[in-house]
Image (cartoon, rainbow, N blue to C red; front, side, top):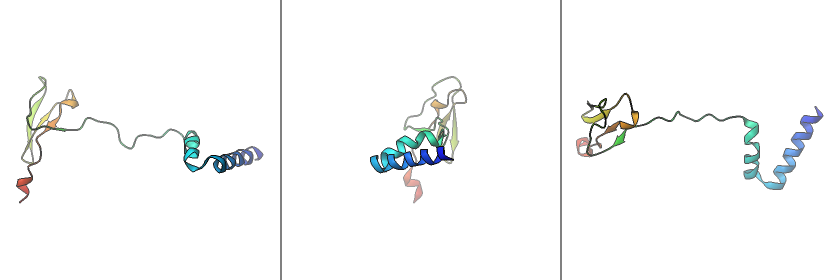
Length: 88
């Protein structure tokens, strides 16, 4: 019990001396490992000139736009820019 109280009093003293912003840096280790909000994944690039980049790439038309999809290398995924003139 005294160890917890002593540790918390040290934290309060450090907070008073250095400020809240530097205290966040110090307390990051207490909070544990933060997981990323979402897993990183290759999203579609928007290109005006689409081309097949490998033997596994193929064209697909989705919602009127042409897309390149590649099941082997997701970095090859690309799609045409959205045509704003179709909105009106």
